[in-house]
Image 1 (cartoon, rainbow, N blue to C red):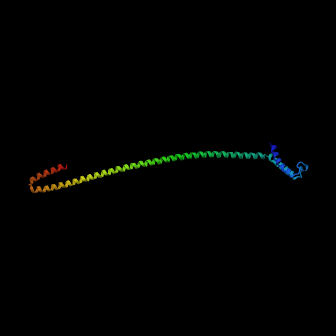
Image 2 (tube, rainbow, N blue to C red; image 1 turned 60 degrees about the vertical axis):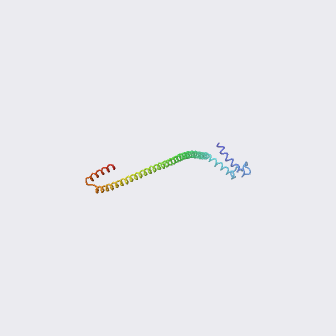
Image 3 (cartoon, helix red, strand yellow; image 1 turned 90 degrees about the vertical axis):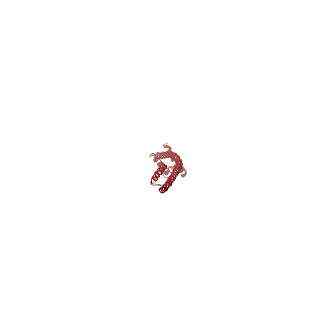
Length: 191
């Protein structure tokens, strides 16, 4: 493998060297006076020094490390993508759950509002009935009070008139007896 690595640059260089010289297989091509030969020889030595110090291994090691780093980055990116997709799915599920809860809350609020409205209507109807009953009771009480006042006034007038008549026509003894009888009759009718 090392030989192939050493020979491959030499073969690459041999093409330009052969093109620069008229005859690469002549003796004068391999003399130190030929600059093309010196450049080719320097290049081959340079490549040999690079191979001796393990530069190709370092390059391949660096490239392998970079490839491994890229693979690790890709794996991390895949893991992050899967995690993000799982998180997105979780948030979508939570959003659906929250939406369902919100819909349920709205439905319950509507039902409660309707029930409260019906209850308020019933309460208002009962209140109106109570007020009507109270007003009727007050009217009946006022009517009874007015009738009683009229009766009391009539009795008072009747008693006064009777007293006047009796005082004119009667003697004191008969008058006392009639007054007592009238009072007892009035008391029995009032109670």
